[in-house]
Image 1 (cartoon, helix red, strand yellow):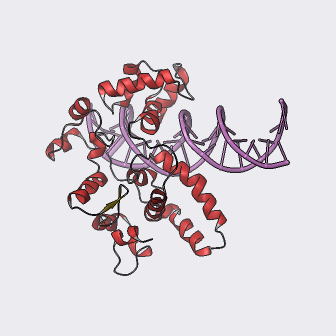
Image 2 (cartoon, chains in turn brown, yellow, purple; image 1 turned 45 degrees about the vertical axis):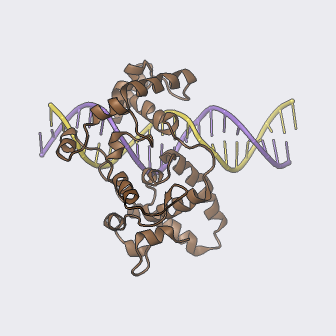
Image 3 (tube, rainbow, N blue to C red; image 1 turned 90 degrees about the vertical axis):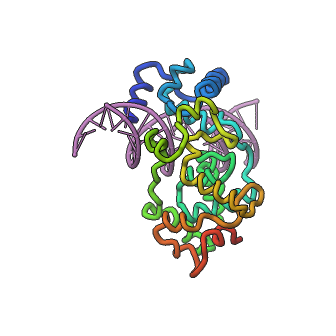
Length: 236
DNA sequence: AACGCAGTCAACCGCCTGACT
DNA sequence: GAGTCAGGCGGTTGACTGCGT
């Protein structure tokens, strides 16, 4: 567990701190050759003196293709606020709805920009209260299982992870087959199939109403009577 | 030019969960 | 059922940078 990473980090000369360009190249090359996943094998395969977690993080937050850099657009911020209101500090889920953004990006942005904004709006007690409410520990939805065993995948017509990863590497949005089998992404695909409207790359309507109802404990804390999630997320 | 401060963000840490044995 | 492993997450830290004095 984390102990393995700590031991790796302390006793076997594992590097810490900022990544060099050379290390980045080694990691990129390794992921391109073997695909994402099996992070415990990556340091050895790549010839890196880094622990598996460090390799994974570096790839996901910096090296992965299609990562968007620069400022968040208005649309992105708007969606982020709505999703945060809905999901709390579930940065990975929020990032999953913002193409090219990582959970680290979203978290950093929120912790700097949004908190500042919120503090500057302290006069507006209702906004303040809303945000604080979403940050209560008991409002945070526990993470759902994100990984699937090979057996499970085989039994549900999914493609074998290792096979798919090694042959295809990453898909067009930079996601592994593992991520593509995430329920959330599946929903995303379903929405596209159903020709719901999109704007600036974001889903505007038809927003997995049933699923969001199922994962939120008290949907009517956020929704008006008879309002659905897609309406909530598309309101301005 | 030198210093201090605040903001940003990459990276680390500790914990949780599911899979596997 | 218990123990271990690997993947993943959110919270936190600290190095770096830019700006004001």
